[in-house]
Image (cartoon, rainbow, N blue to C red; front, side):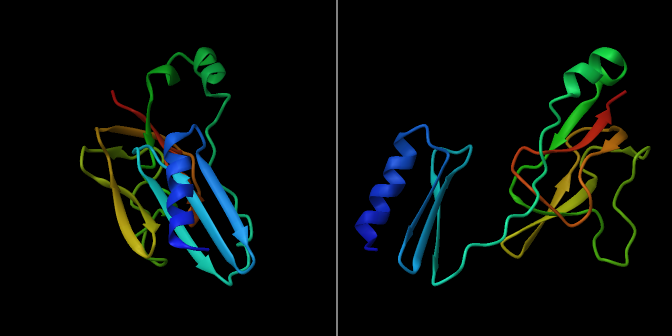
Length: 154
């Protein structure tokens, strides 16, 4: 596939309401994903078989109903993943987790690491409070904007 065709596909995704496009042509796969920013990300893989599907963290659609049943839960705030990657709750396999449910956290405290493209990104608390729930297991793939923690800011 020539570079001009790839540019056309990127432009198509950028100018449309399409969030993701994958084109397979013989031994070439091109995948374009639109992120929150107006640009598109192009991933090119030649002669690679499709990767097996992995479970992704999802948004809990029952959260509003649970919040209505528990007024205390309604004031809890979400900490979301800023990027796509693999979440690790500890700095290494034999180290303790950064945080656990019930821990009091401070703004700027490291909560977890998300590995994206072999880069370890520390995810820090944007505000202080008490961790009420951890919604993602260790070594789990997460999507951008997936809810990772529920925190009582009081």
